[in-house]
Length: 267
Ligand SMILES: [Zn+2]
Ligand SMILES: [Zn+2]
Image 1 (cartoon, rainbow, N blue to C red):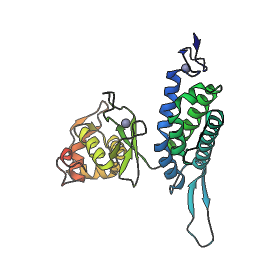
Image 2: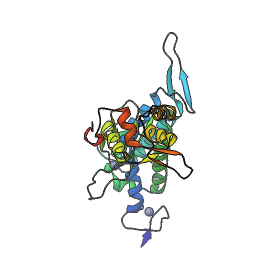
Image 3: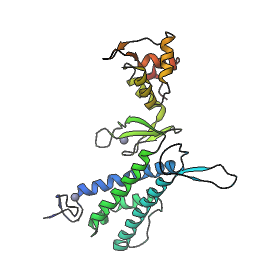
Image 4: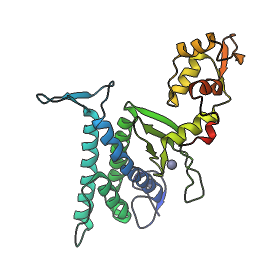
C-alpha cells in the first residue's frame, strides 16, 4: 500500500493526497468566501493605524486610505487559485470551462473537483500552496484594525457538534460571519449575550474598562471612578492587593438605564 504524497504517513488508495490532507485543503477553501469579503473590507477600510497603510490621492479628492499589504495578499491568493484551476483544467478538463472568475468562484470550482486535486502528480504542492496563501490572507485580515471579538461561534453543525471557531465582527457592520461554518450572527445580539454572561463578574476600574471595551462598550477608568465618587457605583469586593472591585452589571445599569435585563434586550 502506498502512502500520502505529503509524507504525512497516512495510507492512500486511488489518490496521491490522503483524505486527511485533502480535508485540510477543503477546510481552507471553504473559508475563501468569508475571506473574500473580509479582504475587501480590510483593503478599503479607513484605517487609522497599522503598518502597510498607503495613501492614494487624486487632486481635489478626499484621500483614499487603503491597506496595501492586504491588497498584495489578495492578489497572491488569486494567483494561487487561478494557477491551480488552470493546471487541473489543462490536465483533466474536457468540455466547457465553468469556473467563475472571483476568489469564491475559483475556490468553489476546486471544491467541486476533489479527485482532480487529489490525483494530480503535484498534489503535495497544491496542498502546500493553497493552505499557505489562504493562511497568509487570513493573517492580514486578523491584524486589521476595527475588529471586534465576539466569542466562539457555537452554531450547531451538521454532524451534531458545536462550532468552536472564534467569531470576530467589524466596526460599523451589523452582522458577523463565522469563517469556519459560515453562520451569520447579529453583532448587537451577540454583544448583549456576552455582556449578560459577564454581568456578575467583579473587576477593578481598569479591568472593567478593558473588559467592556472588548465587548464594544466605552467606559474609561476615569469615568468609572467618577461614578464611584458620585456614590452611583458601589464597591462590591476587593482584590488580593486591596483594590476595590465593582460588579459589571452595576456599571451597565448606570450606562444603559433602560436595559435592566440585558438578556431580554437582544437585538
Ligand atoms: Zn496526507
Ligand atoms: Zn461557526
